[in-house]
Image 1 (cartoon, one colour):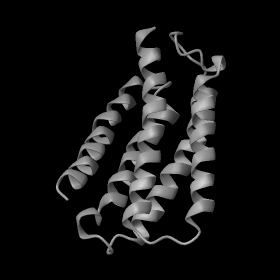
Image 2 (spheres, rainbow, N blue to C red):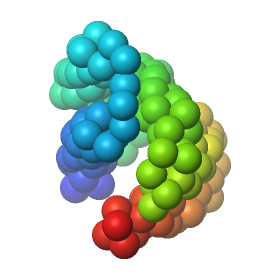
Image 3 (cartoon, helix red, strand yellow):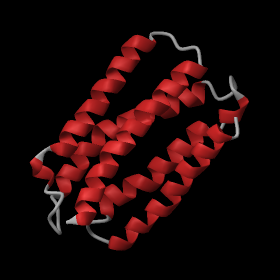
Image 4 (cartoon, helix red, strand yellow):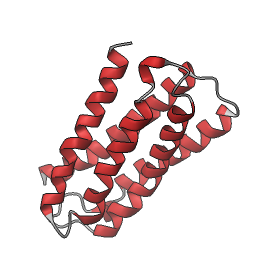
Amino acid sequence: RLLGIGKLVSSITMTIFYILLWHVGLIIFEFDNYILWTIIFYLLGASRIVLSLLPYNKWKEKEPPYMWGIYRNIPFVIMGIMIVILFFINRLAFEPLHNAWLAVLLSFIFYLPVVLFSNKNKKVGMLMLPKSAMYIWLILMFVLI
C-alpha cells in the first residue's frame, strides 16, 4: 500500500517538477509563442495529475492495472519531449545548461522501460537508479549556475 501511495505522490511531484523546469526554460531562453506552448504544457500536466488521481490506477493494490501506467505516462512523455526540445534548441544560449536536454532525455530513456516492462520483469525497475542520477545531474547544473 505504501509503495503505491509513494508512486502516486511521485507521479504528481515529477509533473510539478517538469512544470517548474518549463518555466525556468522560459525565463532563461527567448521563446516565440510561449503562451500557446505553456497552455499546452499545463494541459498535459493537469491531465497527467488527473489521470494519476483516478481510482482506476488502484495504487494501493499489489498488481495495479498495467494500462493505467501507460495512460498516465502519455502526457508526461509529451511534456518530457517538449522540455528536451526547448533545452536542445537553446543549448548554446546558456552554457551552464547546455546538457540539460540530454539529462532529461536520458532520464526518459531509463524511465520508459520501467513503465513498459517492469510488470513482466521487476529487475527492470533498477533503471530508476540511473534515471534518478540524471535528475541529480540536472539539479547540479542549476546549482552550479
